[in-house]
Structure formats: structure tokens, C-alpha cells
Length: 190
Image 1: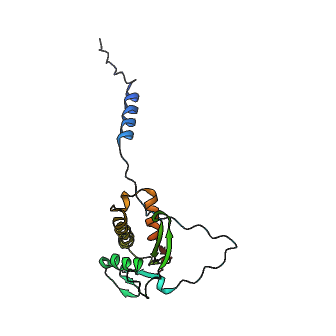
Image 2: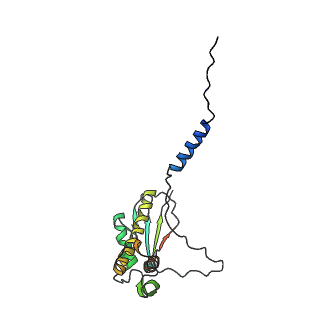
Image 3: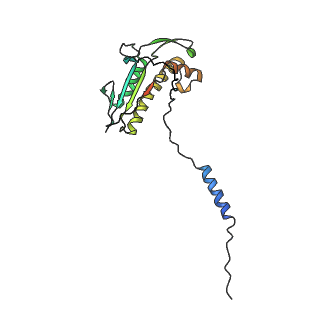
């Protein structure tokens, strides 16, 4: 007489597999890529007039070529010097004639007028063949220049870093050191 082989009850296997799948989906973290936090300017109105010409002294030109070489104001510059050069341009602490013109502007959060470079713009242009690493490094140095100036101002005004200020204080500091980075369309080299 042949022995009958016992079957394994697999009815609950699907339930167990489903529960394991849910467990791993819930407990697994997904790495997300972070982009550059920039707010794009609004679209110009159809009947908007031409913007006024930009004064050269108000523009800090940063170029990165296809060999990842950095040129600031037409002169070669090491990326380690970019932050200080940008800070010098943005703040114009000595009120030099070759740097952005300073104006007295009333800043709501400070309850007083402050002498600021309202029209300072950093113009950044890359080549299509610029490496992503260099592009991000230049972006980081330019943002670090603004962040350091904002931190210095916050320390002098309230004795705190910019990130530790309340929203109204941060808004006031952002009016003093308004982010002005303009990215031109990349150059195409052949």
C-alpha cells in the first residue's frame, strides 16, 4: 500500500508575504534628491514695459567654462576665493564706486532705515559642458556668501544666528541682504 504524501497548508503564505511587504515598505526610508532652493521670478505681464538697463557696477559676473575654470569679472579665480569676493560685492561695506550703489531703505522689521545695496545682482553663467560638481560648488559658495552676511548682520543686531531668528526678523534681514543670483542660459560649446 502506497503512503499518501501530506500536503503543506499554504493558505496563509500569501497573507504572511503581504504583511512582510507592508512592513518593509513602512520601515524603509527612501533617499530623496534635494534640488536647489530657488524661487523663480514671476512671468512678466504681456504689456509690461522694458526693464531699465542694468548698471555694470551693480552686476557681479561669474562664468564657469567647459574645463571647470572659474572667471569672476573677467579674471580667473580659484573657487576658494569666490565666497569672499561675492561678500565684498554684495555688502560693499566701504561704499566703493566700483561696487553696487547703496541706498537708505526703511526696513520694517528693524524699524529704521538701513544703508543697503538694493540693486546688487550676481550673474552666473555656465557652459553646457561644465561638470555638475563644479556647478554645485559655485552655487554653494554664492549661497554661503549670502548666508554668512545674513548671519553677521543677525549677530550684530540680535546676538543670534539667522536661522535662530523669528520669521519677522528673518524677513528684515532678507531685505537688507536680498538674494540676487541670476542664472544666464548656459553657453553651448562644440
